[in-house]
Length: 511
Ligand code: KIV
Ligand code: ZN
Image 1 (cartoon, protein in one colour):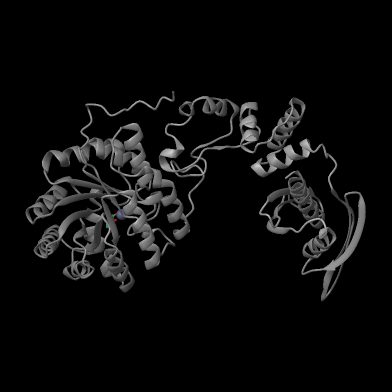
Image 2 (tube, rainbow, N blue to C red):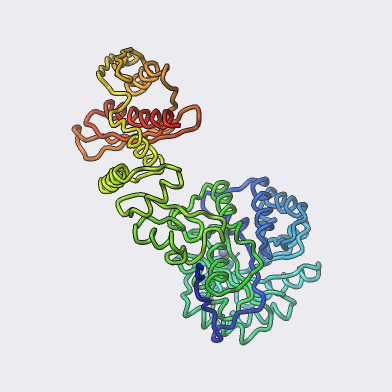
């Protein structure tokens, strides 16, 4: 029976009974450089966040533009279960925009650090307190739930920060938020600060930590260990500069490591991450925790062997818990167990000799620096199975003629299943002309589409080796990769295309 990890929560921690997840993907997340979401896209994300079960969704900054106000109104009209929040500065006109969007919860902020007071707001400490108090009172008078943020709290003098907090509490603030606006906290300072705030204030405490030094999740977790009642997070850790604390990281750490159930449907995390990645255009690195492509991928033979016996040997949680999937990757570290399980996945049965040959080929592909895809494996195994070591299509001749202002012509001779055929075609360039000729020559055998073409020079100089990688597909949706290295770019391209076509043909014939 699989054994889950030990729950690490202990009595030295002061974890609140209820921890609120405040998602700000649609506000701080949208402040990621280069990201702008349409109203429709914001609605799609808000629905998914709601289905995931986050407590609060910061829908935007309604006073900042007509579009922001409109999207806040439209999300409001969705009648979601999560509490919807609008951002505002400490200005009555900003608060009016939140009211106009009919949001019941406001997140109002003002800079409190010396840098913000002196260089941005040009206000004295007293003036800052006055603006903060007036805005909290104004929002409360209009029936809003008020969360107050002391922007750049972590670079604010502690006694002054506490003075600001106590004044806004007196004015009626319902939540006090501690933004680490430029991500300068470390876990030990977070511990000190949040413990101190919790000892001095009864009002629930929220934290909003940025990731400039890669510490946002660690700091947020520390704050929660010290009693913080709420975490501001974003999907995929999006946000200003290097982003905010990542929703999926904090939720899964709390669930898997601390055994804290936040009422979040974690099985929806991966698809939410994918949606946000697609709509924002910010793709996750493969090694991003929880939702990256490699989060549940294994190559090393030792690890795969362990995983196949009991997945907890090399995974701290199961991919199913977050709606992701496990991937066994083939390469130079592959072990026999991994290969056997892959072949089983594709219902390919090999005898011992065939298995050894496929195993050796995969190892040598890995050793030569290639990444071995599942398509490669299928093609290698099928080639082995059909014992058709000779390729069905072989290049027998190629000549290119080019002239100024004339389209290049490629004359290609192929041997297809032992029969020689030749044709000439023109194209926008020599590779295009050659591909057209190949298509013409193989048209009675198969149709192909060139899905991807990548050319790289292996070393410098005009005699550089060209390495071409292609993906081709057939009308049945089969895809296959092809690679070749040659000093001639056109020849490298044609050999890579034929390599891929031959694999497709073997797949087609084996089905
Ligand atoms: O990072 C920050 O300080 C903010 C404020 C608006 C709270 O996003
Ligand atoms: Zn922020």
